[in-house]
Length: 186
Image (cartoon, rainbow, N blue to C red; front, side):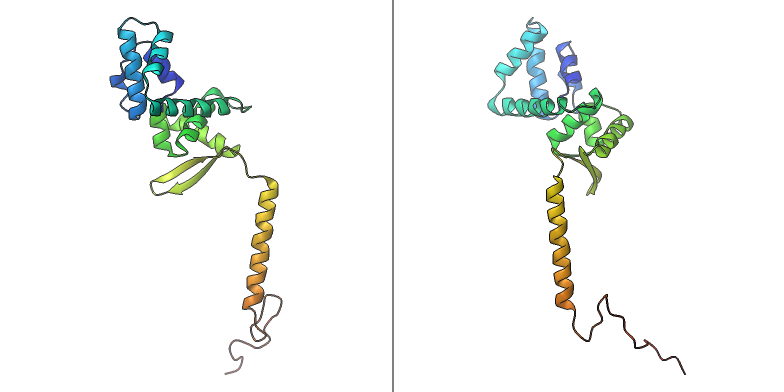
């Protein structure tokens, strides 16, 4: 994923050959910026030129990334770096700590601390996938009414299942068996 830090570095002359950790779409976009800079364009003009030269699918991905960033910027109480991690996570939907650290060009420890803050705030969910610990971006919390409805449905379903399996000869949770399970005398 292309972060603002990487974009600014490219606009200041960082050759895209050093950005091997980026997905191909972002590498191609950075190459377009680099070529425009080499032709003598100033950074803002190089960025605009790269956008004009981008294909339809590149523009779609760039817009998707900027839309995610715009939504995250509006969240109160997050630091700049936490917003950066949340934007990357929302863009990729699900990612491991290693993948996020690589995409952001950031230290694993710092990325992990930022992710833990996002998990505590309910903006991300931590789970164990095939490759280990993964994170899921949560775009909006589940409304309280929906959670209550789900709990009610589950509780009613369990009560119904318990009543269906209970027979008069089988003790239920409210009935205790009065017969001993083994003889008390030899």
